[in-house]
Length: 244
Figure 1 (cartoon, rainbow, N blue to C red):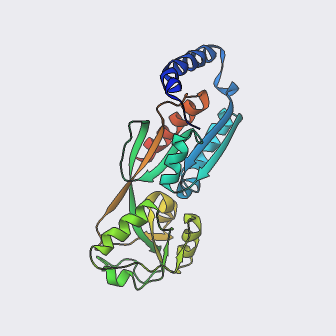
Figure 2: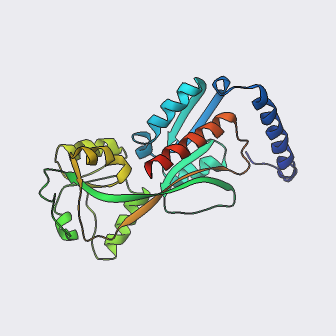
Figure 3: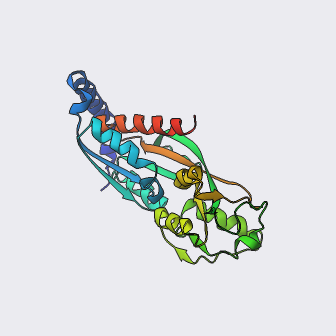
């Protein structure tokens, strides 16, 4: 469904009316009384790492809000945002902007080659690409932002990736690493607890450093519900806490 030209002209006024209604409701509404639905578009790695603690806190404050998350590749998620199929988009990619967005958060995320502490590569310095690729490689699916960046970086040096297994679930990949079955290339936030515990290690390689960006956005024409506002505030606190 698309707005007609008349609908496009009417939209700003309709949003003003909705915003006035929200402000009026907020005067008499306490946070715990917030109800309704919240649709979040995101990636698989966030669902298993960053989002659970935020959603748990949010649910305790707003037990009457129904939360749903949808995971997909970034181009699909962007289309869902445009079509109003999701309220908020929390994604990982290179930095980019669209005039139809409002971006409320942007944080850098380092991506590393990771292995078990018992890996033969653990502790070695400046591991060459050729040596890395001798190890069984477990990767996220093609099309994932950081995997594509890695492929481009290695292709420029004449190397090609041949993973043992491609799978979208980073939690599954982590399990294989913990059993010392091979190596992977993952965002630091996916494995940071295992790194702190000493079960996994970040490999020191000769590869160029790759950084992606955690980004939280919503559509400029979207009516910001109380649950959207509260969730975005909690997400911002969570992400800022990680970097302090």
